[in-house]
Image (cartoon, rainbow, N blue to C red; front, side, top):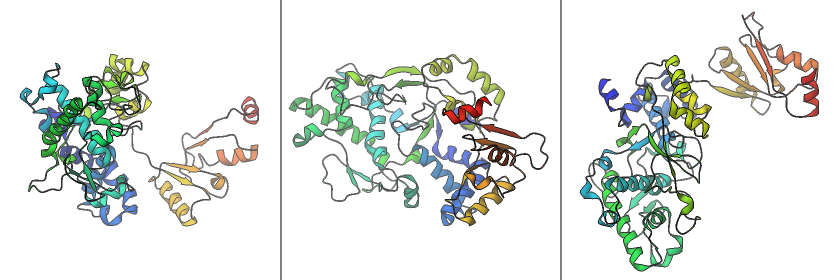
Amino acid sequence: QRKDLAKTSAGLPWENMRRRLIERDEVSYWMRRVWTKRDPERFGDPAKGPERFAELMLLRELDRRTRRANSLETMGLASLRYQAIENLSEAKTPDTLRSRGKTIQDWRDFLYLSLTNAVRDYCAIRIDRNDAHWLQPRVPPKRLIGPNDTITARTELRWPQVRPDYVAQRGTLPRLLEVALGLNAEERGDREIINELLEKAWFDLRPLFMTAGGGDDLRLDLGNALIAPVEKAWRCPVTRRVLDTAFCGYTPYGLRTGSTRGTVARAEPIEMPRHPSPFLTEPDDETQVREWLADDGRVIRLRSAGLWTNLHDRIALGSPYARSAEHSAQQPSRRLRNYEAEFRRGEINILNCSTTMEMGVDIGSVSTVMMTNVPPSIANYRQRVGRAGRRRQATALAFTYCKDTPIEWEAFRT
């Protein structure tokens, strides 16, 4: 554990993070129980099931970087790092970048963005074929081929280049180089510079795609990544999300439709706060974390800028696992009875109900009823409120949301 703690500043290895998830009852027992019903052969095995499920949970969060949806990366809470990139020496800086005053860190940034935009976005990752269905079911896993190779199968993904016949269709990485370095891909000399840099990125990253035995099955193995905290980050003006990496201050998003010089693609540098006990490395101390959320200057600044929300707070506090289910007439009767039984046993925490629960169902363990609208009559209201506190609980709560309609305003006034 001390080794794990020492590595948290640079990141925890993927395998270590997976082991920590397995140690969490919420993952290895409660969540896996739900998923075992979906894939009993894969996740129901007592010996291998917890490991397979923890791996899937990591992949579902980090197999690709979403643009706008909430994820650890877009919320600025974690990033993927690779030692092979971090260990690149200054001598590895391409001459084209060095002559323009760029450093090895700029080149590292471009390599990370290449992994995100040219590899992970297209599912060119090394995964178990049984996991692929639960990640991107309509996107088959790809394998990478070199920039000058010929595509022979639909599952092959060629490394990006700017081709003379398709200059107008150049992708994100060529446009990023074009914007950040002041180049113009429509001019032959600049196009050669862009292609040279893209080819060098391919050769610098190729070891990350190879298996131990070599071969042509080139895919990114996320198992070799470090899951690292984010401190220096960028605010993307296009997605309005946090970027852990920007190339020379430019975001990779919006380049295809932005201006030719990318003036709309400038990202704003920001600083992310450091959690008191990141990556589940220490026992939860809710009081300490709450004080940190209230007092940390970076949290306060990000909150005022709209980059730190209640979702960040819940993640930082390690909100307890809760399971919900839909109890409505659209569900088969057998499934409804199973939900009711699991709810009684405390295996389901929240039932989202239609009027099916208003009459004839007695679940004594209900302590709280929340209504998302005002019932049509007092009798309906009494029936719904009466679901809570039927076993002499110390406390029972009924809470009603009133919508902005005349009928519900009248109910609210009375």
